[in-house]
Amino acid sequence: MRIVSGIQPTGQLHLGNYLGAIRNWVRMQDELPEGAECLFFLADMHAISMPHDPAALRAGTLELAAALVACGIDPARSILFNQAQVPQHAELQWLLNGTARMGWLSRMTQFKDKSGKNREGASVALFTYPVLQAADVLLYQATHVPVGEDQKQHLELARDIAQKFNNDFASEDAPVFTLPDPIIPPAAARIMSLRDGSAKMSKSDPSDMSRINLTDSADEVMKKVKKAKTDPEPLPAESAGLAGRPEALNLVTIYAALTDSSVDRVLAEHAGQGFGAFKPKLGERLVEVLAPITARFTQLLDDRAALGQVLADGADRARDLARPTLEQAYSALGMVR
Ligand code: TYM
Image 1 (cartoon, rainbow, N blue to C red):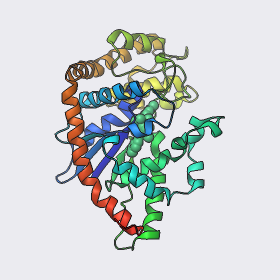
Image 2 (image 1 turned 180 degrees about the vertical axis):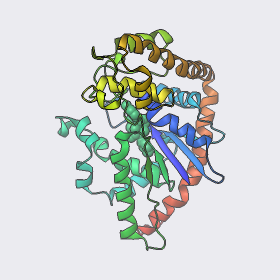
Image 3 (image 1 turned 180 degrees about the horizontal axis):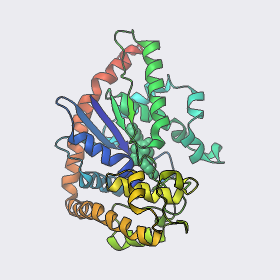
């Protein structure tokens, strides 16, 4: 069993990242069977696919490392590293570019969303981004990839690339790549914006009121929850009553995830209440979960040299794990090394 996942160091870590992915990384790390391994990385090479500010990326990388450790990623048990410090990711991407098909990449919804009406002006990196993501996991023979719902299509592509490469260049009894399974949480896999129940909570949303950042103060959290868009109806007794009420469903989903409950159970407990009563409870619960993370984050950022060392050690270990698969891929393609 090998667990691999990544996150882009662009902007603040938010509640969607935490509930959709990071919390599961920590759980998988904490329940890891003997002999299994976790690798978690900062996908800074993905971050250059969109216009970006180098100084912000540099600062954001160390901050995200601190945030992940504050959330419970333990560098003694998991390999925590920064993608640019492991050049094998880029090398394998190039090799996989020979296998990935233009048609497959053209169907990626993230490319369509992010390039919008300006396809001609989008970077080539934005187009080939999913191939780098495939390299990220195939390089380590990942078996499980814990991600939020929005990454499912990219993981399916990674499986298609692995399968085609194995078919084209390896024998059936000695495949080069393992087909990775996406692990998507049954609930909270898609946390929505606090301002618009039809858009996902995102680092790139221009409105900071649309998301809860893991470093928001208690006051900010309470204010954002209070201002979150809702409707005037009271909470129903069952989830069927939330149909057509995406903002209400989102807040109840967040509450359920934070209390390790289900939407139906939360509704059974709060049926008939309006948001004036429900929102303060949600805010308090959020503050309870986030306050220790924020405190630890601030403390970790005091020692940037130590964080740099964690990433350097993680990259050493990742490079060692990456080498054999990369060599097999070169050799399968007939390249002389
Ligand atoms: P990124 O940086 O956008 O997000 C990191 C993780 O957080 C999840 N996530 C969400 N989950 C629920 N609700 C939301 N609103 C929400 N927003 C984000 C994402 O699904 C993701 O799991 N391409 C990836 C990074 C990446 C990667 C990889 C992931 C690069 N290589 C290899 C897995 C394996 C990305 O941009 O995630």
